[in-house]
Length: 353
Image (cartoon, rainbow, N blue to C red; front, side):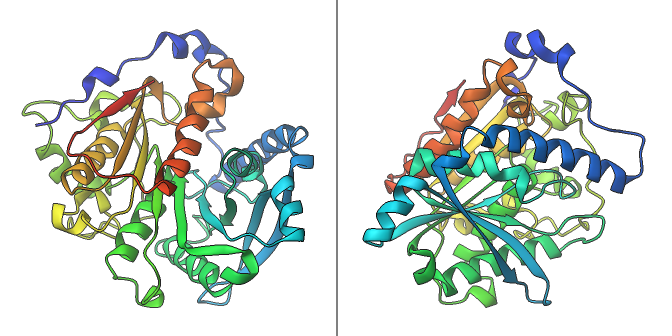
């Protein structure tokens, strides 16, 4: 039985900056919170792009979703690689990036710095999808948008200069939930629109939700008897206290589209190399680590990292936090690691930062 409480409790690094971390807007209508927070996130990204813009070639495109909606996408490739492509086209891996924000927040601009740094550090072509958000859109819209984006990538693989056998997906928080769901259903052959396409080659799950809160009982049963889960231990944690996910309907416990973390070992055997970045001071800690343990038991190559004593999305604090650079080390390293086609290990090895 599992016990991950050793990773909890605030770290000294976090305690040193916590008082100076600005609070997110509250007490306002949800659309106002969405607008204000998206503006803050986009400004922060654009400030970071001052030092990055000349190093990256970006291109804006649109994807027509199954219901006719024009989805925003932006691609990123290092300027050096783009210049080389102008002389001799290269076939590159593609990384589909799915932003976090509780299905409420995120814009195409808010991810510019993140995606630029990914391509500069890994050499992959990054495709940033602005899937649709609540409250305007609810389940399964975001899930369908991600599926439609993957189909579009395969349909335009030659124009993108991508390798159809080296498409990876990754996400942060809500985006990681979408990534985990897409990979589980895609690699199990359960998405009719994607039938016949190569399976995904890897996934990077940063601070991932992997089960719906209404379906948490199978998770609790895997914890040491009598142990409170991170839902309880970190109920009032900073940045992401435990809260409802009312825009997602209550599924059945064995619905692997909404509950990849409740998959069986046999169902998980088709998963590709998977990197986990899990925060110790996060309500989502246990479900992330339990999913990592499940994949290990299913003989899936796993690359598991825990940011001990740090809250959900700590990297958003920026350079004030000494631990912030570790975030990119894990996320970027996870992409490179998956492309190396690593072998599975039967050991549940966790790297602690």
